[in-house]
Image 1 (cartoon, rainbow, N blue to C red):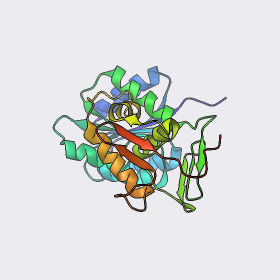
Image 2: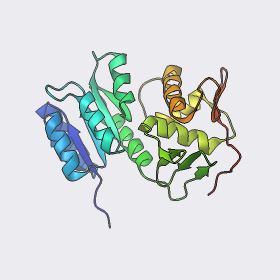
Image 3: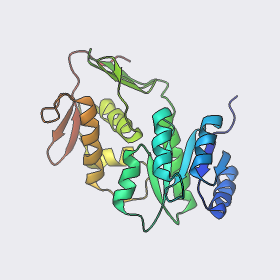
Image 4: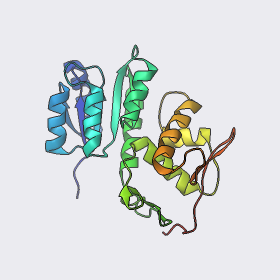
Length: 236
């Protein structure tokens, strides 16, 4: 029988570490803590946590660099903690580096716990996932692997989640709102179509040979996006 899921919290505030340790322990998680980015990276290598909660504003190795280094090696979920004064551009930067989601301090415990549950659900391979292979693009949702001409694609968590939603729905069009709700599940920030467009743009750059004439991800103007299966069908 497997033990409790392991969460690493990286934050330079001792008080925040104490609060989160108590909260997460009470809800059945095993908690590791680090007061700076360098210690956090060491704990990632040593303990292989199931999820990381990461403060952005830390001296020395900041949250962006920690996120980047983790994502070069692991696909574990990363939730960013950010202060209210941090700009939207900074938050998007963290997401583009591979973070799954972000939460603004101060936050409600229920919101953080919901986001953790959501991120961990996405990180758990499905027992009956789909495999798509058209000879060029191959998607294994059990193994969470995407390859193009046999070469692995380095997708961020959000890009992978978007692709998963689109493949499951194909050939149906997925609306902007539906895509946002499913990929940013349990997120407390309000619907913003720009989140969807930005990440679709990044995903297309990795999947498509020509982003101006896409093969896979088609835009239904004013509605949403559709994944177009090619000659070989999805195998289950």
